[in-house]
Length: 127
Image (cartoon, rainbow, N blue to C red):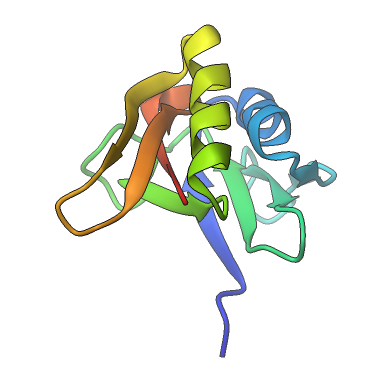
């Protein structure tokens, strides 16, 4: 078994796609517009090296936290493979105002930093 994809509700589909492309070299797929659910749009984002796919979704009915179809997730963790890679991406994020928490070793042993994506969702980058 493997994870096929992880879905994220967002208000800004283009901005969310740009974030994943800019910071993670992700390939952003074509925008899909549902004929069955007017107003629903999505696109898939594929991380390099066969990483997991993300489905970015938007719809006018997507709510702030609390409803069945609410914006965001708590976080996703992306392993970059080394402390140096975490430090480098954290520095890029800091320069762009996207770094939420700088590199550190957590109590459970992860070396990580946290970036903030559009809509305020958090992306942990780990070694």
